[in-house]
Image 1 (cartoon, rainbow, N blue to C red):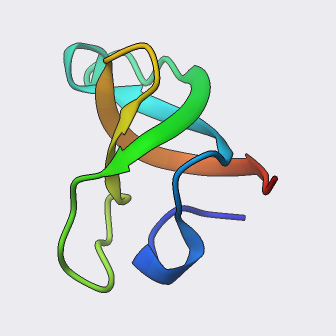
Image 2 (tube, rainbow, N blue to C red):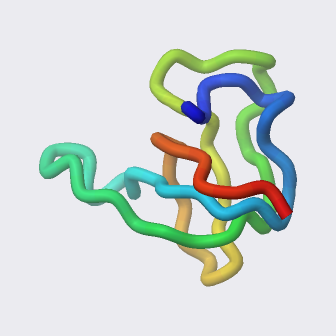
Length: 66
């Protein structure tokens, strides 16, 4: 599942995000969502979230919903 719709994202789900510093490389980082930062209902590049480890990035893939 892609992470472009805010209604699909909530704290605690497992996601793959593209961190801000990895934008040019396309490298993805896995983690659990701590906080949803995007306020728009849809974002074409992915919903921006803060992971439990403090990193911030845009969701590229939703792995699992707990």
